[in-house]
Image (tube, rainbow, N blue to C red; front, side, top):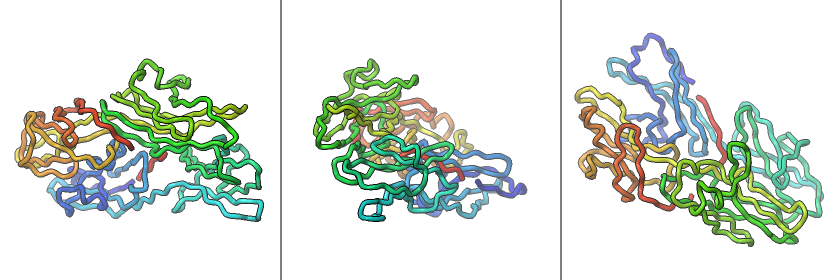
Length: 379
């Protein structure tokens, strides 16, 4: 949160971070963080009286850095606040030997987390109710098992990856990426591997999601996705899944589960993979420009598209080649409100489908993307 003097004749304010200057038209001229493709769908700001609050959701380590608010007065003067420093850490389990028969497990972060979260521990994916400290001691076992931890606050829980203790043949499911963002109409691969004790034989494998009533649904047989889902894996450790012609209704969390020939021999990869399906929209800032005012058009999505896509701009379906662009933005030196509706955007050469400047969806040409846990910060 940032506060400023009530004597300022405020015309406009926005949050920015200098680390994003490579995405600005001019590296000395900060631009609104909400327009940055690296923060697509994750940033919102609220202004109350003479204070402003920035909220960033679905945090990742690349968000670490300094954040400031830019103030533009009625006279066109610009000034910015002192920096708010954000450090984003991942969560991992580290272990050390206490004795020859005991291990000390630590739920570790690379920085001090405030406020102090509640630490939870999991054995073979199941919560250990009696353990809620940052460090725990484990004693030698003849049967190897996987251990993971999580840091929980009142609003979220962030889970670490699993480590195998007292052996190598552990129950585990590992996803290459727990976040997937794809354009509507595209195809997406959920890359996944799994393991289990060597004494077990896999008898059944499947992916599932939970419907609003909490019931587990297999996307391969559900009416909404039947015929569009293909299991690419096997019973030997590959659990990858492919989904074609994705739709917004496909958005949600997907998990892999397998069952073996031994009583109690089943395991689910939790948390799973969160899929977000987006379209492209054009956002104009300001939305109602005055004569001669510079307008920034931004090609936006509701999540961060992978592989640093190239954005292509069109006017009435024809490529725009004589206007300055940067990342996902097009800069217009002078344009009327009516003319804004003639501009559209697309990714690379994947189609020339128009996206009007008013929030109307487009349908890009299908493309296959192969792409960790959600968290939120408020400043």
